[in-house]
Structures are given as C-alpha cells and as structure tokens.
Image (cartoon, rainbow, N blue to C red):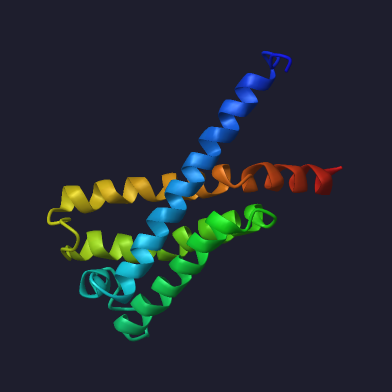
Length: 151
C-alpha cells in the first residue's frame, strides 16, 4: 500500500479530531439529556429563568428530550451530520439565556455556587456552538452556502 502524501496526513488528523469532538459532544449531550429526565432534574430547573412563561419542569424535560435526540443525531446520522450540527448549535444558543439568568440571579446548580463560577461557565457556551459547527462540517457547509448566494 502506498504511503499517504503529506497533504493527506493533516486532513486525516483533522477528520479524526472532528470525529472525536463530535463523539464527545454527542456523549455529553446524551448524559445531559438523561440527567434532565432523571437524576439531575432539580439541578437543571435552577437554570430555567423565572421569567420564562413555561413550567420549569416541562422546560427541563423537553430540553432533555432534545438533547438526547441531538446526541443520537451527532452519533448516528452521518448523512445529515451538518444539519444536526446546525441544530445543536441553535440549541446551545437557545439555552444560553438560561445560563445568563442563572449567573445574573445567583442561582446555584451543578457546583456553580459563586458568581465567578457561573460567569466562567458562560464563556464555554460559545465553544459548544463552535464545536457543534466544526465537528459536523456545518461550518464548512455554511461557508459554501454563503459563497454560492453571493456569486
């Protein structure tokens, strides 16, 4: 078998890295979704802003179901991976106001028992959005779509 060219090696490493991030993100969403529906339900309710006109438990259960669906999509739907990545990024953006509310209102959950800890958590949310877009190829597809619309 011929040796891989040097230009193939970085793309293979990138594909492996994207796959690892996608699997890690999918596994994390699966664990979080299960937690929403069972062992950490009360903890997740602390992240539902009180100004949201929905029952906190309903929001926690619904978001848990969405997280499980997204995790399965990230792990199993190879053909629609970019679309699932867009959906996961949108989900991470949609729940961000709850994270902000938890920080602003000083509500403790998941060991986030100080303003500094709650604020630091906010910094990771954009990383989740980027990870969802990058690891699924959605970022590349969005750029391709944008270039086609501009030409």
